[in-house]
Length: 276
Ligand code: 8IG
Image 1 (cartoon, rainbow, N blue to C red):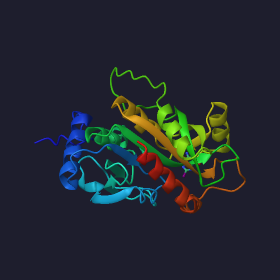
Image 2: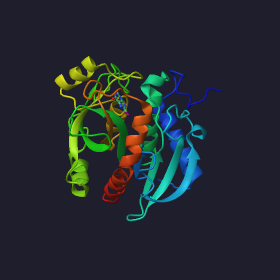
Image 3: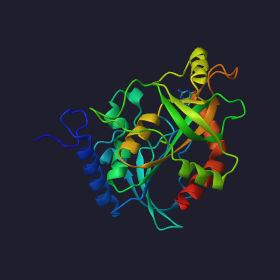
């Protein structure tokens, strides 16, 4: 019999797969409905610890359609957290599938679609990225105001025309600014990766109107909007984009900057989610 959650099978409906995954999570967590979803990127691993009580932890590989975490510093665990202040339930996706893993765009957005099928109306997409602004030293969180998708692909299939004006909710950005008025905002440019940019490509991103360069988020944001979710995007600038600073990029410095920023971004996430 065919597996309705096999995202590699072109006859699989990815929304059926997401519903299956959501049903699995409801059973495994005992939480019927999750209100908000959080996707944790590079440097954000510990940032969900202040949200509230962890009700359940599920290895993502147990959930239909999910694949193992591929990046050091990302954890392949899905957590159900009860938010202390509101009694709402958050689904915390500790890892994501990146486009550069080559498993297809359906897998990249499966987490977001699963969150929507689980009842979420809001998704907070976080990432670690390179910054073009010299004022954003490594460890600075920045709100995503808009994006430029340079992956040459879309999570949507067929004649699915979705309006992406205000993709990154003004309401949620205002709310984040209530928590931390000093937060900057920027345009996130997604490159396919897995290599970092050349200095010329970083300059190009700037000429195009970009402020942040990374390898995730835009495809998930598009899928989230299509699924009816309100989107908040927050980047942690973990390094200057190539050519912006004279120091070469290393994954170790990415992890270091993330760790140093921990307390600020943890409090930021917790306070924003309390206000949803
Ligand atoms: I962390 O400088 C992190 N992720 N594309 N460029 C791109 N992705 C990143 C970078 C960066 N830093």
